[in-house]
Every structure is written in C-alpha cells, then in structure tokens.
Length: 409
Image 1: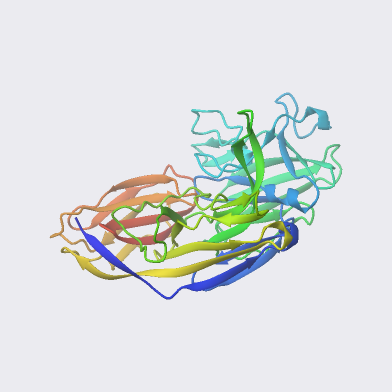
Image 2 (image 1 turned 180 degrees about the horizontal axis):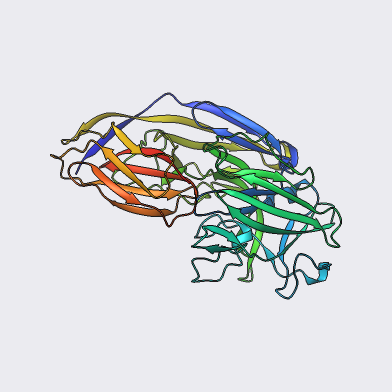
C-alpha cells in the first residue's frame, strides 16, 4: 500500500457574514479567502451542464420574506393553456444527493434513463425536449408557468409567462459557455443571467430545504442554514477528539460528492443557553478541483441575528511518501474539446503494485465512464453516447490524483 503523510499549514480564521435573517448567500473560494455576497433572492433557477443537466430552484429565497415554490402541472394541461393555482400538484424540492439533485428533475420516471424530469433525452439527436409544464409561486404570491423547450448543444432554451400567457418570455442560457462555471443562475424577475455570482467557487453559505423527521415520525421539508459544496468539489467528514492535531489520512478518510456533506448539522441550538453550539469534534477535509486538500473546522455560529459563521482553514500538504511511486504529473488528454473519442496519455509507475485508474464524472460528480490504465498509460475512450457539456477526468495511482477538464461537443 502506498502511504502518504500530511502536514497542516498555518490556520487562517475566516468569517462569513450572511446578514441578519440570513438575507444573503456567500460564495467562497478556499485558500484565496475570496467571498462574494449576493442577496438570497437575486436568482430563481440555476442550470447545470454535463450529463446531470439538472435545474435547481432557489429554496433559500423563502427566507427573504415571500415564498418561492415549484409545482408540476397535471399532465392534461400544457404551457399554452391558461392555468390555475389550484392545479398545482405537490411542491417539488431540490435534493442534496442522489441521481437527480435539481427540483425540476424530481418528477422523472424511475428506471427510465432518458427521462430527466423536465425533458426526455433523444439518443439520436442528442437533445432533450418534450418536457412537462411547471408552475412557480413567486415571493409576492403571484404565479408563473415555466417550461424547458429544449437542451441542445449545451444550451437550455426555456419559456415562462403569467398563468394566462401574459408577459411570455423565451430565453437561452449556454451551460458550456464558460467551462469553469458549474452553475448558471437566472432571475425570472429581471429576465437575465445573474453575473454577480462568481464563475468559480467552492462553498456556498446559504439556506436550503432538507427532509427531517418531526416528533410524530413524519418526514417534512425544513428550511435550514448551512453549507453546500459546488459540483466537482469533494468533502470528507471526520469525527475526532483531537481536531487540532488531526491531519488528513488517505487510508481512512473518504471523499464524498453529495452537495451537503458539510450541510447544517455541525451546529445545534442549545435550549439552556439559547445559543448555538458547535460540534467541537467534527472536521471537514475539502478537495477542490485542483486536487488541493483543505482542513475546515467550524468554531462559531451566531444565528439569524447576525448571520455570522466563523471557521478555520488550513491546507494539507504531502511532505513524504512510503513505498515506490512516481506520480503521473505528465497527463495529456486529446482532442479537447472532443466529439466522439478522446485519448488518455500519461506516465504510469510500472513498479508500483497500485494500478493507475481513471474515471470520468459529470459536473454533478456522477461517474460516466471509468477504467484501469494499461501499463503504457495510454487508452482511447468512447463517449459518443454522452450529452454535450463539461466533464472531469480523474486519473490516479494510489493517493496521487490528477484532474483534467474535458469538453464534450
């Protein structure tokens, strides 16, 4: 087994301020201490590329006063009909993990790989269309109807209007327009893409709904305040009695790609002190898209009065290795962008007993292809059946990992 030891750099204290009543979202990039504060009601829906092709509703905006809810319209009605609010079916919510994350995809038919919920994938044309109509209840309690006309060549074409058809708008967002942007946030009210949200971010401090059991054993959707990771970011959660001394251990710490690995439950409300308590034995190791590992420990949360969260971060650096291993620093992937096939060409340590493996994931972190590299480190991969969009190719041997971005046309 190839083992690596890690050293923790000096800790940095970071304060995140969402404002009173959690009025803002804060998008944060590890290491740079760069944070962008955006009003929580600045956007309504977010589009994601890759094979996930998810569409997310802004659930946190309910904290800003009004309610932003997503509902599917019964199948007997279409976008061209004049709709009624009483026809709204059960409210749809985002999921932080699973095959489908976005609320718009929660109506997909189980077991049908071509049904994305909001549209049906055509394996011949490689487009998505023929989706259902939704109703969106806005923050002022008014209603809109919404439908995705198509997803073609990485572009979402969608339409929305008042329930009687007034104010009909058709717009397009390009999920492949910027390969570094993991989500495209859109404001229905302002009829525009929200450019204030940064292209690159690792964590967002915001509000979202999550299923929790009530005192009677029922599962309800609760609005919580917590931390979600960006697509492509991996997090390992660790419980330890010595958080200061604990460093990343590749032999026992497992990275996960669900968006809510950090989540909200690193804190709890103390009914004796009427203050929030922090789980002092919980740590998080976060791996960014460049493969850097950062250690995070929360130390304070002030609640809705200020919306302040305080944590420490420190980079985990490899300082020594035990066992023969030559990391695959030279990695070439071509052609890129790719239409049907691409080639992996990298250095592989033939003396190591650890095989060199690769996996191709979409923007949501789901594995689309995977395999073991031959001894010469060169392999051709066919992705002609995948949707166009941004993918991430992860190549590793032992604990060493190299990630490359791949664009499928």
